[in-house]
Image 1: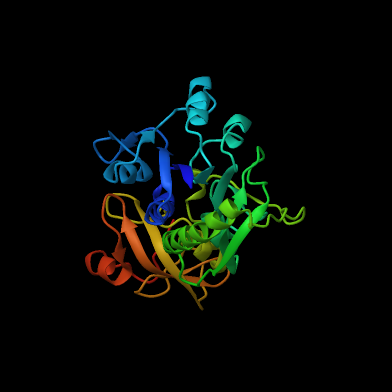
Image 2 (image 1 turned 120 degrees about the horizontal axis):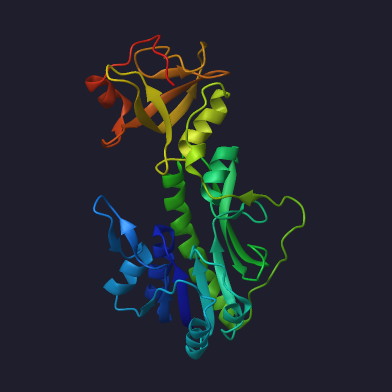
Length: 308
């Protein structure tokens, strides 16, 4: 098929790679404009943009797909279909209707649960036992189109947003590769989304990231794993020169009882409002992430320490 691919983050790269390998003609790759990244804040292309350049694919990085000139350029591609994977812009009707067969989105949840920007993180934070990837026909509403294909994935007790992201990216790429031929041949069946069970995965805000140790341990654990690696759930560790910010990157639930935020042993078991959380991997501000046992060799945390 002659396709346009619209995607920006790492999650989209696996799908674009699979479409190239499958022999589809990629008429253009669309991605968000280069943005400041790293310590030097140099303008760098998105992961999808970088992949496209490495493979000689034409790239466009419009600030807005609603611009009349961009819509005209998109129409001029004479596409059979458009594939959208975490592009980062709302597409107007003129773009959605330009390809002969329409535009199709790979979404990282089991719709209608977790429509919106952060479905992977929100599923973990909510304690969902399963999630999945789905291919849907795009409409003007936010993630409201009919479903063409689904793949379910379990969320493990030690899954973080990073580990689940990687599994879902690969599963989604496989699902797209299987579904596009059915779309091309007219064999794909479209199922409207249910009216019940709609939830929205709001964008993660930095103010959400501080750990509230008065919450139940299960909720604290889910926040830690759901926000790992970015932005990272954090707490304050008392230090000689004042509190030090530390991110909790991985945790597990354990039995324990104490005041919320109290360290219960010498291996970072921390009391919550109900139960306790074992911190398995942490990252001191300005340092690389470390397993807890490595972190504690350089900065022991005594039982009875109160985390903020």
